[in-house]
Amino acid sequence: MHILNRRRVAIAIGVMALVGAVTFGLTLKTTSQQLHSSSSPGTSNTVQQIENSVDQPMRVVETADSPVHILSAKVKEISGSDFTKLTGQKTSLATVSSVPEVQFLNSSTKAITGFVVLIRDPRSKTSRGIIQTKILIPQGETYIVQRRAFLRGEWTSSADQNGQVTTKFAPRDMDSEKYWISFANRSELFVTVAHVSFQDGTTWTVKEGGEIQ
Amino acid sequence: MTKRTLLPLISLLLAVLFTAGPAVKTAFARCGCVCAMLCDNRCEYQCSGCGAVDGMDTALRCCQQAQDAIGDTGPCTPENF
Figure 1 (cartoon, rainbow over the protein chains, first blue to last red):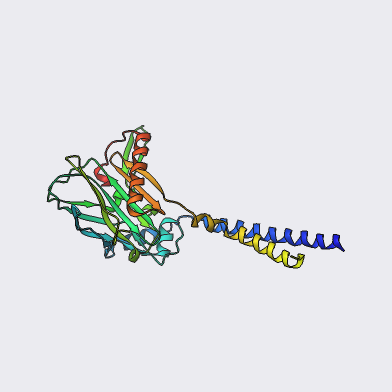
Figure 2 (figure 1 turned 90 degrees about the horizontal axis):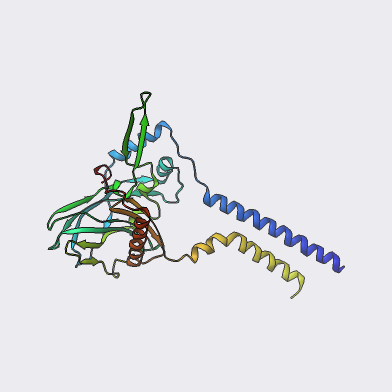
């Protein structure tokens, strides 16, 4: 009787372990699954439609002591299915916004030599940004951070039959997942200039608190 | 505790462990950043689980180390500005 019960227990545990392992395997497979990028003719139409679409504003957060003033922060916004079509990546978001084009004014009394543009979702505590150095923005001048500033370009070379090699720099664009912010909706995000370096060697950093969370 | 009550408990524990593994990993994620030098004077980063300023500080260190490792690659060209 005891042997029979032990065997039942062992079989039950074995079955559960197997079910659990299969479930775990499927979960991992689903999590890491990435759809292959579509290169259908519709993709170029999608890109064109996005380029022609109206820019959407991204929420700007600035503190009173900020040495810059953001004049505009504009993004492109697409559906989750278009995001998948373009990048081959899955998303749970209904709409996905691009990285912003940010125009700001150096409203300080000094020339700026570096800055950090920060895009943040306070709820998930996820940030994305660029750290720019070795530039010069004189006092009172505006500066535009283009969307492609968030992307790494690629140097591509081609060679013809005569051995002529042509090398050119091709910036990546909408088909790169880096062009898009896939961790939060536009309504949950804000953009700010969080750090500034000045020509005289001093720096300014935004203080956490209020809307800067 | 009898075997009849022990068996469902073990089953439940196993099921929770196997299915919730990845979620537990996410729940305990600490502040971390991934960064990449786009060119000599620009670095792109993404941080998770960080405060706004803490993340930026971590990213600044990340970018400095990345630049030290890569060396001088030249400034960003007008094409990618």
